Image (cartoon, rainbow, N blue to C red):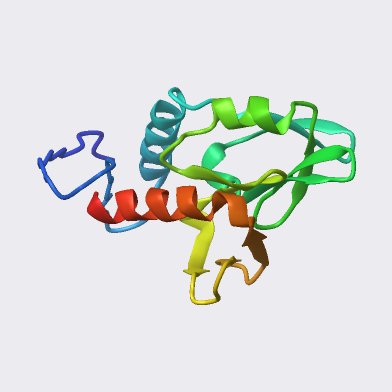
Length: 157
């Protein structure tokens, strides 16, 4: 096995966030180690969120979070396959989250825009948000201006 990795860096003015592409004949152990190293380096700026599932503490990567919402007296993190209970407040979590990735859509919900399939702004006075897994939620009227501003900023990047 050849341990030498050919690395190429390209400056792209149109790229808002770093994007890594790995080309290999097959997915090997070396490729897995490279992916893990890149993921670990990328997560140092935005920490994983401690959360509980079935009484066990787990650390949830921000990139895996679909949305964070209140459910009764609990704060819940939804991922693609599972949900977790968090002991922090929604406001405290909002301060820890990557502001380029997450937006508050109501008093009780924050969404990861990278997990959103589309924003339906066609209905007057509301925004319907559909996630990649088909789940839908609604933005509060008070947040519509901030959401539209956030989305228009993203379009410019």
